[in-house]
Image 1: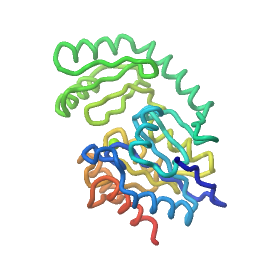
Image 2: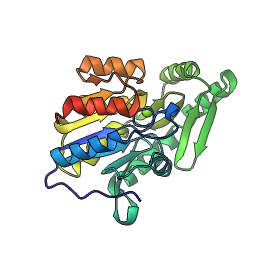
Image 3: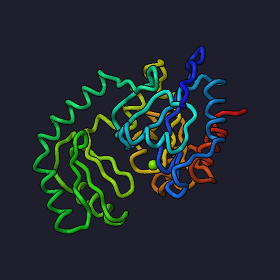
Length: 265
Ligand SMILES: [Mg+2]
């Protein structure tokens, strides 16, 4: 049974972790070192830190991940699909942040309607020139799964070279790419979620490993940042340049290192 933690008397900071390959390693079979939970519960209780997961997974896929990794407690917030916000409610139900999620959905519908031609071009390109797949499902109208990182590099440069709607952006996570509205990403979702406790970017720490984490690793979103040792090079480089913490260990062990860097026991 996953517990919901009681709220600390004052909320002073927020931390967002990416899920896949930041907390849970592909190579680790979905499990997570329990030391992470000791650390995060200590940080939460001692410093009044709200912690959450910002992920490319849908909420449903993330809940599966929590179960696989035997999460003993639920996070204080979730940013799913790199843009939807949820808070834990009673009886283990997740409560959507309605005003944000509804505006997000409307903005995406409108933008994607206007972007049909651009999507058709991208689709034609990947079907003719690559082994990648175009993915269009409910709630996720426009995405690509490539067969390799190199292939996704190629697709990414093709997309970057296209004339497209000013608001049309995308989030890339290794071989996955999801089109999105420029105003919605892990970064803007994190800032909005932290607002719930009146926490501003000077008191936010973000930790991630891949391209789709870069939006929350920006200084205007998180004053503090870090990544595990397995992060992709551009993310490591970005964090180093910002003066953040690049951990020496991969996955959750690296995340614990990042926590130790910012929160002294
Ligand atoms: Mg990741």
